[in-house]
Length: 269
Image (cartoon, rainbow, N blue to C red; front, side, top):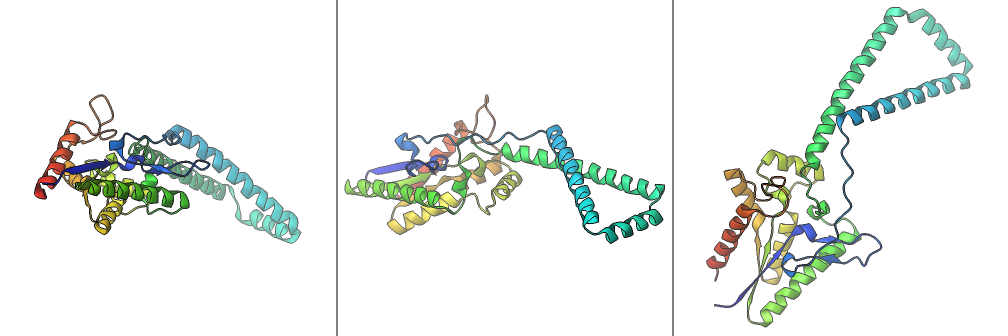
């Protein structure tokens, strides 16, 4: 049987450097390389802060609307006179009260909306993995990410060629990210929707196409790990003293990954 080299790659560090750098990407957890941590995401405002911001926005909009009306009346004196006549005829205390009541209910509903948005944003932020640039789930849309993926591809191909030169078999195992194997399909769906993607498996699919084209095996662990996480409702990332479902693989994650890799290798010695 040929010797086998298994290279494990994680999507969490397949990201390009910020503008101004060399534009290269780092990849491959087995090599021990590390990527610079991306800037921390802005803090999610709590509901009270969101409401204060909304109140301020409403006041600004009212002032702008008032100024627009004043400007219109100043530009066209006849329009201003007609408006005053209509107001004198149609506006009474009950009409004013009805409008004020309507404004109150609209603002009340808007406050509920702000509460809901703040809660949803916090929930989505809780699915974000520190150190993971979530653009990795997208088809590269700019030069920085195209270059990052091209460098990643070249590094993988170079490892494959070097392995074959020693008459050994090259296997690429793609590790899971926390969001792809979080044991809640609805949470994963909301996470994908928040990223604007239909699938969280773009990295796996891209690397599998590379393997098919260049003749080496790619073990995409995340799909099988996701199914196991859903069936057993088990967190594969995170520890007892950390946030469940996030961070590095825990004991269950390592054990499942080992079983999947061993099964794939034994199936094709």
